[in-house]
Length: 417
Image 1 (tube, helix red, strand yellow):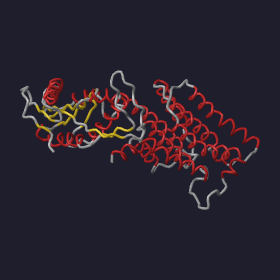
Image 2 (cartoon, one colour; image 1 turned 120 degrees about the vertical axis):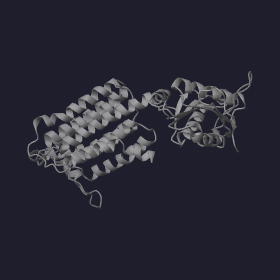
Image 3 (cartoon, one colour; image 1 turned 90 degrees about the vertical axis):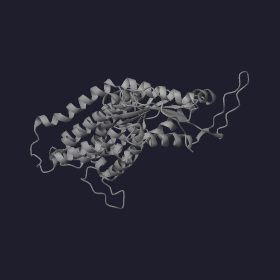
């Protein structure tokens, strides 16, 4: 469910809003002159934001949208669309746009003034120049080739998006969700919905205001995606994909009178790192983070720092959530961690054994948990931290709860079988 929500929001909401704004409103015969500049203004705002964050994907996507806006504004009128030049330009553009978005999706998002970004920028600018040259040398050739029935089945559309164009759009739409969900890039989600808005613009009445509305929505989508990416950069832990300590601090300030907090620490993590290396240690942190992410009981897991995590249950007392906390402890303990292709560190003075990429070793992992109930944010974190260290001192792989405000440990709860 979270995956579907992540794919649909907020891009689907923006496109739906643009679509609903156009329903029931007749398209004006003459578009107000100022309306023509609205997409350009949005693109300019997005470009300033992208340059500030050195986001090459957004800059190049905005350039593509600006070129599409220019093409539709200049050649989309009935009298120009009827010409060979207008038909060539718009059908060629409808094919190249999804292909360029697909390239943006699979290439790394590096800084603005890098060789990779400059080369892609030059490639994008060369496309309209080459198209103009081809249109002048062979008038009508591009449209006549793309208008051929390449597939035996009829593909619906307005005529600008030809059969090869539909294939390009379909392939890019298949590629973008996969890139969006697995690397979890908010900007790729923006590219997906921006391209969908472009498709709606190409299939709209080119003489009316619909293309302007949809292209404006596409620019807004990229801006929203940039803001979302910035938020994730600040409030999301890259390694575990859990909310970060900064997000925890904000959540603590919004709490009411009743809440429970638990500090979780991976047992013997330093020894594990020393034995198998930091790369395997990072894999272990990701595994533990994935188990904590599905906490239940209305709780949220945060990456506190190092090998420590925090569980926050707003509006809950310790006795209401202890079952869920015990479930987390049992789940982690009963999930063996597989070490692939790793060799333990050699003893001092002895050479390291050669790594075997097929070697697989399973090790048990346990955590210790300290639980505390509502006080001030600083005090409750301190209480939970003291309970955590009490759990580690008394044998690890257990839960210790402090009675709120007393500083006394409640009866210790060792792990159940």
